[in-house]
Length: 458
Ligand code: PLP
Image (cartoon, rainbow, N blue to C red; front, side, top):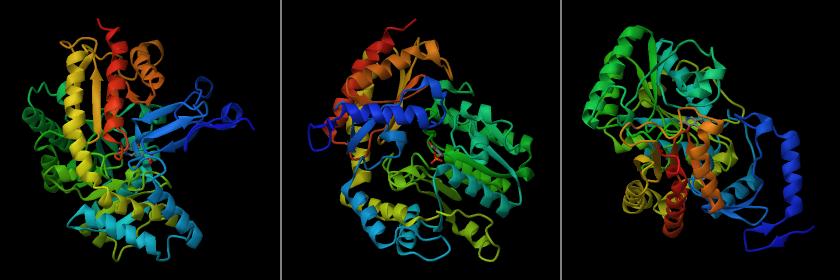
């Protein structure tokens, strides 16, 4: 044993680091990776917006892990709730009634707003989307589903088929009853639009064309990330979601809002759609519902759809649906949101700290084409040339092509920040409990790291 305690949360333990790395490299098969090409960092501990490796280095967690750690590492209320629940009833199957499961379903439907009273619990986001689509197909009797390019919906068969990014490609042919369309993305408008209003109008006209050409009588659902997450922090322009609602009503289609990444406070609302003027039929959630301390996801079901299953059995279920440890952490999450004023603080930090700082960063770095976001969810889009908007690294780049953004990420890590990067973007998505000074320090680190991107300009 050769470990040194350096403060309340961090240790230096080179022997543990070697052992953990060896077990990992020999035995753990990692997601989305060529196993021989990776060298995962052994992580020793975490607290709030920071985690530590076994060399005692600290990292500001500017990705909230996979944008799930909304209440930060080791929030004492969540840890205590899980410990208490484990001592009381660690697990119970889904067909019985359970106190924390019922309480969490009541709390979630309460914040979803009028017209929502029931929740179906899943283990994560993919199976939430999977089951929402199942509900839509059963209610409408129509099988086809539309989803957007530049989207991610999860890694099960239907969810990966819906996904509009390269993670789908190797999984094709998937479920053949999915068609993709272009969502709004003004900076790289597929519609040659120059204003948010034009983008909204043209994206809706395009969506209606797709509905008509794919056959409205065949389409049961449209699945949309309310704000596109990994694929760019794309905020719907004015009127877009209202227009989607109207098209769904016109053609008898169920609107499924994928709120897996943006729900539970990420943009300063319980659900991101609440920042806009339209309400979906089904809401899928996961991640922030309990910060991922125990896997949990689900579907919030509008009363109209729930009523369909009052007499007709729902043909779906999971052994761990509404797992008490996960639900206990979810109930505790609601307590923290209220006590720590999470929604207000996210809106405040977003507008008062992040927005002006990113605007200044854009001024300082020629490689920044656009910054966009809300709450604690932002993207810095990097370009080779501001006029042509050519991305600093090409779509889906890897290896040498991805070097400029890899260099930014490496500079961030060296300075003590764990970043979220994707293609030609750096995202800002720290835990919602981050202190204002850590947030500013993290933005300073990103600012400095972008010097690396500037070196690659045309
Ligand atoms: N939907 C969105 C928008 C996501 O960002 C993700 C995961 O990143 C998922 C669905 C899938 O969630 P999970 O990984 O919990 O299955």
